[in-house]
Length: 128
Image 1 (cartoon, rainbow, N blue to C red):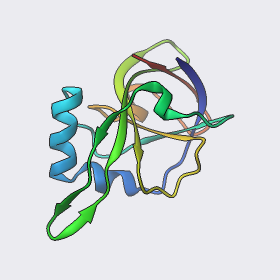
Image 2 (cartoon, rainbow, N blue to C red):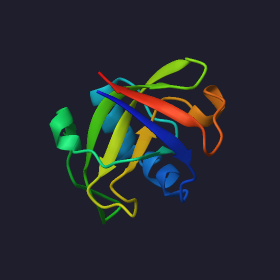
Image 3 (tube, rainbow, N blue to C red):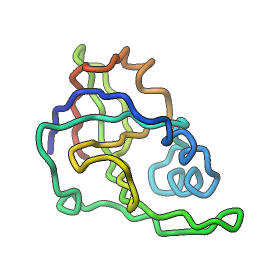
């Protein structure tokens, strides 16, 4: 499937979660890369049912005596307006403050810099 959306600012919480060793280890196992410590937030014009995209699941876990909730992971390719691409993944946490039309995207590098993105830019997401 293909999705088009606009880059929107995040709240900065993705960097905290992406820095946690259990998440980093799990992403390395299932995606083959350790994520950059942050997420790219893409706002779609509509909501999508991520369960129809056969997501991979990361279960809940405890780290430093604190419970962290699992998430769904969907491998994707991210494409900017010039056609530059990079592989990454949609992450859909069980607990989130984002509305259901916001996709959180991870990749092994800082996507904003690599793809020369600014808030409001159109981004294409293609599932694998």
